[in-house]
Image (cartoon, rainbow, N blue to C red; front, side):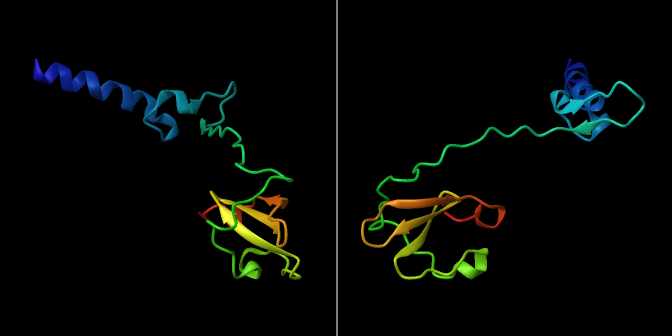
Length: 110
């Protein structure tokens, strides 16, 4: 009984392992003789704030080194804030979002 259960659980990964994945749905079988490849589908995310929204500058930290993230230096009338992998350019006086910046270099910021 235990041997048959262990064989049952080993069948799936062995069959799906042709493309390097243990999940069969992650592999795509091409029509021709080209090797199978992995496909990653990522759903687009919605940012919590859009241009024109009031950004909570009181509760978020100011991004101190914009050059580190390939961002233009602030001229004093606006500042950068990061939240959930997105950088927001925010008006210093009103706190309104001027621009939403999402790049690979800023995706790790929380």
